[in-house]
Amino acid sequence: MPFSAKNDAENYWRTRYGRPLATTVRALQDGKPGSYGDMLRDETPGIYSGGASPLSGTSLRDAVPLEKPPGQKKRLIKNSFPAARPRRLRYWFVIPFGGLTAVAFITMPPSENGAPLNRPDLPPAAQGAIAGSPAPALQFDAALRRFLEAHEASLVALRGFLLTDGEGFRTEWLDATLRMQSAMNALDAHSASWTDGQRLVELVEAKRIVTQLLAEERAVASIVGTPNRYPGLQIFRADIVPALAEAQEISAAVMSAMLAVSSPDSVGPVGPFAAFRGDLETLREDLARYVAAPATHAPPASSRAEHFAARREMLTAIRAEAPADMRPRIDRLIALMSFAEDKLSRILALQQGERWDYASFAFRTRVMPLAARLEDIAARWTPPR
Image (cartoon, rainbow, N blue to C red; front, side, top):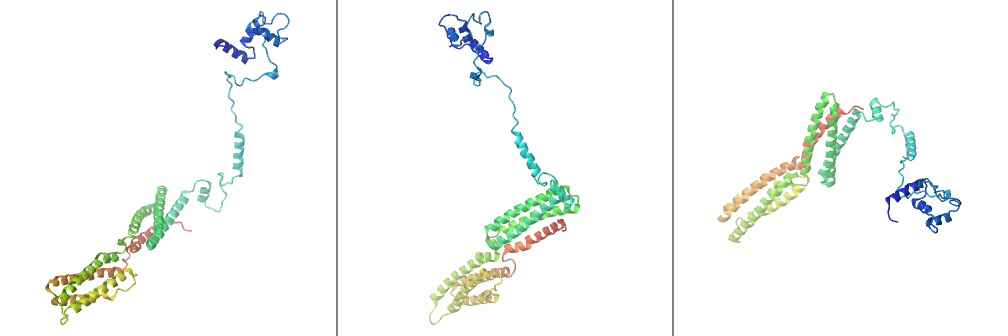
């Protein structure tokens, strides 16, 4: 059947209120034998049997509907035009959730459901901290404790880094310095409610000391594993070793020149110069062992001042008998001996003093005093137990 807005709309409302379709009504009104209405009358006996049709003389909308038995009726749940029904809110799922919440609140310990604990043995500030947020005094004590722990951890880790040159100690030291700075910032935040002027002044001093202490610790850690940690060893490698190497080269050249003009009948200065060359090699080996030895090791005898004076006197005597073209080189040897003696005196002073390991020396003389001052201030802030 072609689409008809009138028929479809009328059929919808007839179906909605249980009345026959418009096409069915028109077919029943058609009285021709063999028509669709005649077939409907045969299939529904008793409704239109006997006498005139109940549709005659009445309106189409007032006709008796061809209703099905109640057992054969179906709900029009898939109607193309469903009726708008008010949406009912279902709150049944809230009931079990509310019941579980009530049970949990009842069975929860008092310290967890917000009720204050009955702890008469604690001070009022501590009881207030248990009932709600911690009291300012307790917060300050906790921040001070974190600061002291981080401060001690930084000193221990830095000391371990100095002793072992291990990367693990360096990582721990860096982490401790970050925690110490964070704890100091927390202490500074708590000072907004302080009323003690002495403590406020001490806080400013503590912040300044922390800044200086961290700078000194970074300076100490930066020279670990570098030549600057051992200044004496650096002087030996940069000054004495090249000077002795040059002296050996000059000695070899002078010895070759002397041997070229010597004869078995006249040895001349070859013997004393050979002794000087051997003494020079002994000096180089002794100094190499000395700078690698612990600080308690005594300096070698070949490094004493009287030995350097004897070498210069020997070279001066050899110069008078050496070939004329070798005398400038012998003068260079005398100058190298004076240069080596001066540098060696500085190495001996460092080795016998406290600055041989400059990193440890700086840790003892620059880091630890600042740490002691900081701990003294923190001790005055710590309440007596």
